[in-house]
Length: 173
Image (tube, rainbow, N blue to C red; front, side):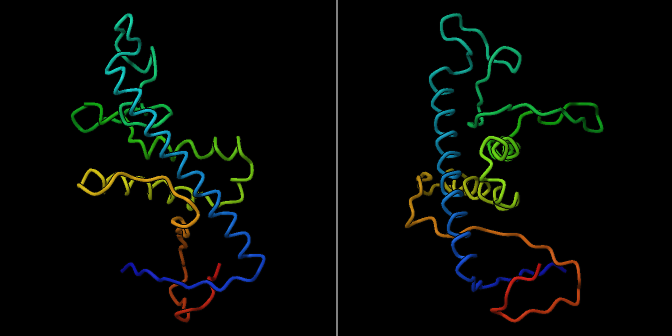
């Protein structure tokens, strides 16, 4: 049986400033990922299925990168085969592309290394959820500013089944 717990954190001054810095970095990452998807979609919309509009060369992973899923990165993954020997969906979604680029982000921008990997992944999934809501008929995802990006998600696994915490207790590591 899986159970979710929600904790209200009461951080001290140091922890509060650290979380505030995380929120600023996560907002920046969210906005960058959103811009990346919009840019790639516009590029694909202009170019269609072609890598080069002049020569009408067909886009393929060997000749050029035009991601139909709308994120910068390699849209192809190592194909896995099903029981019948057919390749299973060798294309990756935009969220998968952006999640697999997170280690490169941490190398290129070392200040992101202080943020837990699951927090960064949840941030990409947050954008993916916004896109799913858009395709379900709700509004297009918007760029975030300080006033409308004030939280982040942390996933903590507790292996000890005898774990007990008060409703507004501290997070136990």
